[in-house]
Image (cartoon, rainbow, N blue to C red; front, top):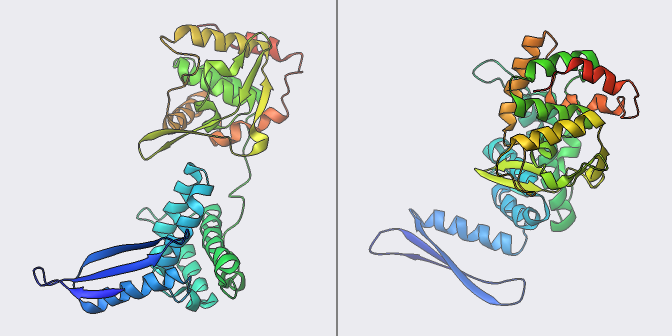
Length: 328
């Protein structure tokens, strides 16, 4: 490496020569440093990264962690991790040396997050606190496993938050039918909630559904993908877990309803998304429908859980449904 002052601009430039993982020699440079000290500090960081020396800053190691892990993780999952790293980890640990970060510093950071409240006085949820802490621990675990860090200081510090935010709330079948009746004034949302409730699928799975996923002769729907909106783009990924790839048998009334819904759509191809609603739209309609139906507001994620109890083998299901629903 070499550090030079550029006479025309009065700023400093670093030329960095290195050998990549294939053994090929390469050169890069960075301009615009206001002082020689800043240029030399950047130079040292590049050398530390090249040698995998954990005398580098946490910020520099995060760049290495990103290079190692980003391509191995689904895009939507990485987007969540990147947001936590950028907003919750780098502001506190970014300038600290990886090898010098202590359990006491982590405890202090945990306490700040646990005591944090936004402008409305709302604290971070216990589940989110645990997710943040897990991400910090994952970075240190990576350093221990692949870069010879002696130990993960998060283990000494202990965790924060908890796995489950609160006990799940459920709708009885009668409560859901009241809600569904209210939703009939907006057919697309009505059919969307029908799929969520009677098939027990997730929001992302619902929003990824296409006509090709349905076999109306067999009365089944194939769940094999999930939808996310990332950075202004529609992104289709694999489902949450391997077990999430599944074929669900639908009750006969739902088979007929989805056929009715598809007949209402214009110019929808077999591989086009059927439900062009947003997750925020689903949440708004959920709140509106619950209020108008006079039932407790539950999370959309919790709608799917009663499906385990309400199997399609229930003989009285279709009778109850036909009595509660008037066709459009």
